[in-house]
Amino acid sequence: MTGPRRDPDMVRPYVRTGGKIRARDDVRLESVLIAASGPTDSLGPDPRRVMRLFTGTVGGLAVADIAAALELPPSTVRILVSSLMDSGHLTSPVAASDHQPESDLLQEVLRGLRSLV
Image (cartoon, rainbow, N blue to C red):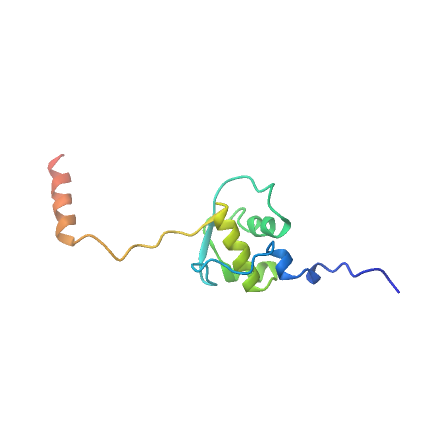
């Protein structure tokens, strides 16, 4: 018989996520993420792999794209991404709020700015 199998795919998702079993509610497969600057030396191997995907990218990456690139289950990647968001390594762009100012108010501000010139 040979020794134990050393296949990296044999690592259980529970181990990959550091024992976490749930992702944040706001992290979905279509969620787009942007990397924040900062050291990644203290991260584990899988979070570092996630962060490496962002080097050289101008825009963000969707969670589904990260899962495909790393060949990991999407549920596992959602948990990894959630942890990276909690630690400040990843962020999600802020969506425009539904509470936009009225156009009359914007017109008044524009008139005020023009009168300064």
